Length: 131
Image 1: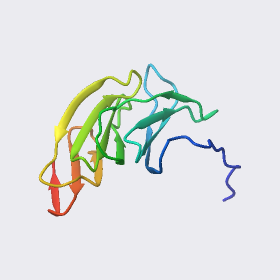
Image 2 (image 1 turned 180 degrees about the vertical axis):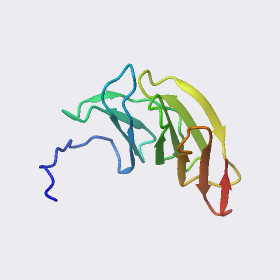
Image 3 (image 1 turned 90 degrees about the horizontal axis):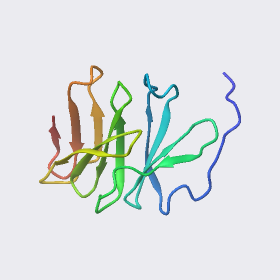
Image 4 (image 1 turned 60 degrees about the horizontal axis):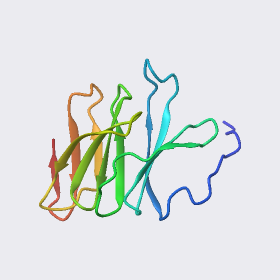
């Protein structure tokens, strides 16, 4: 399979990007959006056709964003940071939906259940998994 040429955005974040995820299209948004998370403690939302930034949701992390997951319905996403918090946000508006604490140690990964009825977080020195 041959892939098309790559699109690129220089300085897309102020620091290294550690996470990327696709938020599926919704009834109100006919295209998927790209989410990126970085050590600059932010998540950015991008249109894939022109790589234009359309928002910076999930503000408030105190350490770098290391994992992202989009809900299967496409409207919500979750960002996790080394600060041990999971921030769930509305992809289109950027509004915060929930902030979950995952202590006693940092979180390195997050994923929604394929049916969208659960969120799993894992990682850290404790070797824990949380639902």
